[in-house]
Image (cartoon, rainbow, N blue to C red; front, top):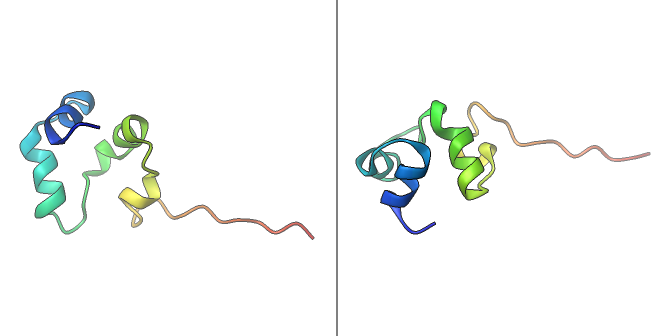
Length: 62
């Protein structure tokens, strides 16, 4: 990705906001940025915010 500043530019926020998510935020990424970050980085939304995007379940064929 190239670091905090390039990511911030691609998702429309500031480098300081990205830094905050990584170092200070108890919840992590702000909900409004989960989808843009997923689109830019490929990190699944359920890994970024499992509290609002549960992990997909795998159905077993019988």
